[in-house]
Amino acid sequence: MNFAKGLILCGAIVAASANAQLRFEISGVGSTQIPVAVASFADEAIAPAIVSNVIKADLERSGVFKVIDAGRVISETSAVDYNEWKARGARALVVGSVSKLADGRYDVRYKLLDAVNSGELSSMGQSTAARYTRLAAHKIADDIYEKLTGVRGAFATRIAYVNENRANRLYKLEVADADGEGTQVAVTSNEPIISPSWSPDGTKVAYVSFEQKKPIIYVQDLVTGGRRVVVNQKGNNSAPAWSPDGSKLAVALSRDNHTQIYVVNADGSGLRRVSNSAGIDTEPQFSSDGQYIYFTSDRSGGPQIYRMPATGGNATRVTFNGNYNTSPRVSSDGKTLAWVSLRNGDYGLYAMDLATGQELRLADNATEPSFSPNGKYIMYATEAGRRKTLAVVSVDGRVKQRLTTNAGTIREPNWGPFMK
Image (cartoon, rainbow, N blue to C red):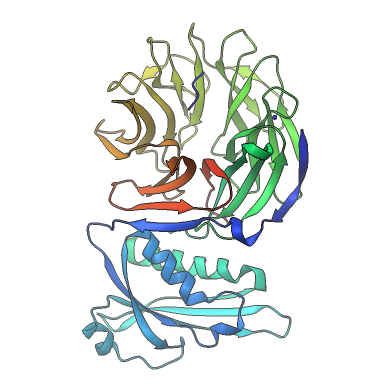
């Protein structure tokens, strides 16, 4: 972890090889689990993805649900014996079907049935291209999650991270589905890539590249494949973070001889300094309402988390426990702060209720946290077998997931926004 790279490919995102996929290993469950039976969808074998399998994997990975395999095919038009599913302990039943349309797309339909009260809770129909059948399944899982918990699901979102192979001097900025599938390469370079940050609309990623032998901030358009330099000032240009409306980026620059926080328009114009200290101010993050910037500063002697108005002004210290606190991240509802604290020789992941100041240690051996867009999970970098990889923990610390891969060192995760 730091407090304080020539380009091969930079174009439209391209599919990575199948053996580079991330895989989840799940440990721990929520304090209470909702039992949900999931049936095989009628004719789902005709599609590129088995929709019911994707739904079951999503629900199981969340730790919120106890998934009951229905053991048979049930379409959304089938008659259902609610007493059977109630007797099997199911709170809800998921049924559906897949059919192929004349234009080559797939029609994916589903219903969520209330096994206790013998009624329908939700339904959905989607017509989707073959390559998006997994996405259709994730959207169904999101609907189930929301209808049964009252919280929006985040299965149909994406993550960005850096895949590093130092032996071959190869660095990739990759994008994948939230379950680690569907890996695509956005940027490949012979020099380091760091600090990916999703735009709020999910179409762009800001990042830092060393391809010109110094850190420069770029924005990569994932739709068109184009990119542009946003900040290339004298010295170091680092730590880009988007404002909630996507109009600005907060960045850390050393142009004035020591690193301070600046805000710049998303097109690179209007650069202005917003922090003013004799120390190092870095790692800015906008609050969920865009009114404040959280950042790391050593102005008190060691790195701690501070908050200041987004337009600049007096900063208020937020962290007081431990002598080394960095990497602030704020949940989408503005209620929780996540950060990394070095205590007893270990980088631990912590979460704080900003209203009460209460802290909770969520994970050991953790760096580079990033909230899921629904604020219920945090992805972070960790080490497994002397190799950096990614992991996920729920904000209550009960559910833990580790992502494994056979493709290099994975680090610097950033969880993307909800997609429209």
